[in-house]
View 1 (cartoon, helix red, strand yellow):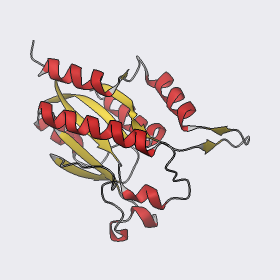
View 2 (cartoon, one colour; view 1 turned 180 degrees about the horizontal axis):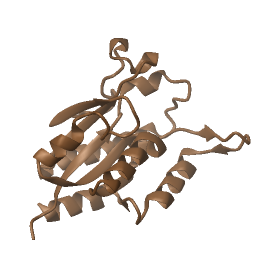
View 3 (cartoon, one colour; view 1 turned 120 degrees about the vertical axis):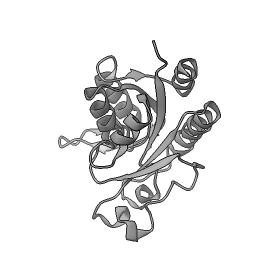
View 4 (cartoon, one colour; view 1 turned 90 degrees about the vertical axis):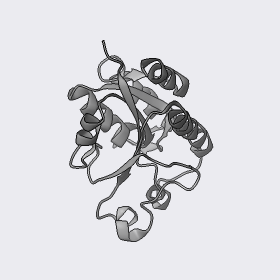
Length: 186
């Protein structure tokens, strides 16, 4: 049996979000610490790092805006970068072709927003046959308010997202668990 080759996917960790009305720094330091540990650990283990940027017609997400750049607090030198204009990192980006060409069968998903592009990328990847480690401690999201007026904190959104993904679409993993599995497979 051959080893399962892994890639780290860093979804939308970009300055565009800092321009949005919902942006807050409440969980930023914790996110940056875990995201950077995941990036550094992947590089040290020889795990390819894939950076995804969201690009669309909304002002902070257009290439011309100057905000489609790595979040200032992070240091990343990706092996490859893709731009997407939908929630899944696997739609119209060339990422799936790159993964296949490089023999990747497992993904470590991290980035911004937990319940949006990270969750959608995870579901899509699982549906097309990839194993996925969903590292929510290396993800960032923001408070959201339901139509009923009830607000959900980032911690509540993270818990809900883990609930619906666990065992069906992904293994919920810490930074160390995800890196440990990838190192063992290598």
